[in-house]
Image (cartoon, rainbow, N blue to C red; front, top):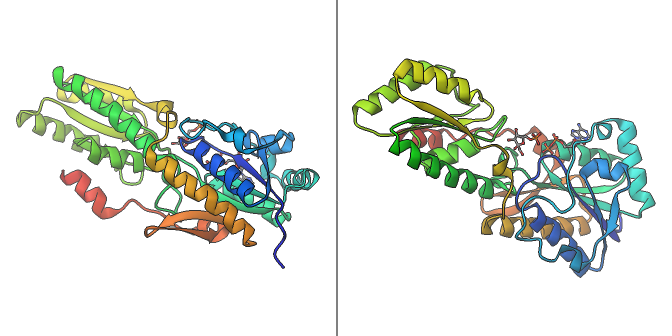
Length: 322
Ligand code: ADP
Ligand code: F6P
């Protein structure tokens, strides 16, 4: 028989992402509307182990949908990777009468959710990461805002780059995944896009491309480099030496993780937060919510973690073509 859920906890874990607050708000208000109590757990699994747990009411989440970051805070917690830490976390949930937890984070956070579920606490994960690198879903909370932030910044760099007839290398976030770079590559009309999944580390190809474009009369050359490849500053030095064209590197960094979420991030995060509570009330546990083929859906965490996601070949080809 499905465990009866009377109190739901919510936490954010791993890297923060714009739209996490919209998800928290939706979890809190949906749960209250369904007659449940809600506890906010601060600073991810670390806050759970430290018992940083607060009661949440409808007003606790007023005026947060438009705010970046996460009002609950987030953290990385090594202790939670141990069986002892996980059991301690589940015991703390029982002590605070938390029957189920909505975990908003990435793959690592789902492993923590899986561990809690094994220890008797119902868990539902929501995909919260700007990197879009969660295989079971076409959408992750924060990606839309981050990619728009990066796109706007790159437009600005492009203006000055054209004025000075320079080459610009702009590094965007994505330690293992090149989705932000791919999207900006197309959205900003970049001349070169370097993705961790695709780059062959052949700088000569880029150099040849820059020289050929300059001969055609192009005044700028924008290279979008993903964080996973990195080394933008030294790359700029080598390219300048090889081409004789002034080359500058700009690393966009953490600005991409902040800021007010876009309408899409507010909307999808809100639906996902509500959906998480509703499937938990149906007795589901150890699940992660995704958006696939135009629908919100959910997957077993283990199978979600075993799925693979690759850069779409056609999208990559178009990015290079344009
Ligand atoms: P993300 O959730 O964005 O992928 P991390 O990989 O840093 O970010 O994971 C966030 C947190 O999830 C970690 O700090 C840790 O507390 C927890 N976590 C990660 N991996 C595991 C694991 N294998 N078992 C239990 N908890 C984990
Ligand atoms: O949120 C995802 C991400 O931005 C990655 O692109 C990046 O590698 C990582 O987080 C860096 O996060 P932190 O410095 O907080 O560990």
